[in-house]
Image (cartoon, rainbow, N blue to C red; front, top):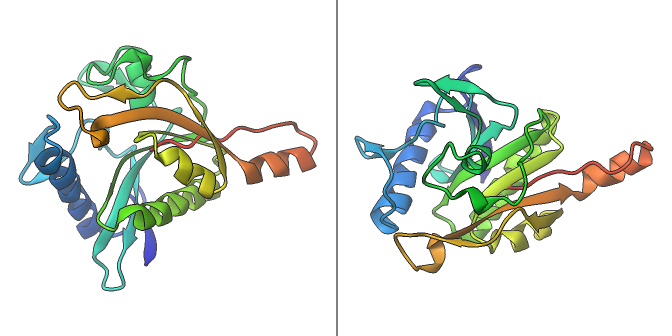
Length: 215
């Protein structure tokens, strides 16, 4: 399997995978989980799917999509139809995103340039593919100078984060969907400290540096 990083500004990556990713999101979130999300021509997308976002895709040997996720840097600020947008968890905390309750985080989420939010994770290959995808995303943002990842996802992602080398902590409580009581409708905002970042910071005498993981 192979990791690809797709961005609109540099036009890196495969646009075919981008549209396959949006269609997979629709299949999983809307068709299977019945979440009320905007769709167009068989693809699920929202107002965070703008050029400031980038994407990480995991592909099979034949080039087809196995898994994908969206990345947004935490210092992102854009005006969308007169509304100030940053990233999902931060906007929910500041009551700018009515579909996610404010209590998703017990404290103001980070808004620095070395933090990246990971969201809209989808996979056709189970936990193994998801793990490879998240590992690939962590490698991508490290190359971009990140020290922190923050994500919103199933509480089981905490175990995955630990396995990938992150000390994962919850930002807020586990929240159940108002539309469903199913296990896959429960989610939690989480942050994870990159153990490599902590070790490197300690060796440099700069103190602890936290790194957030979010799914």
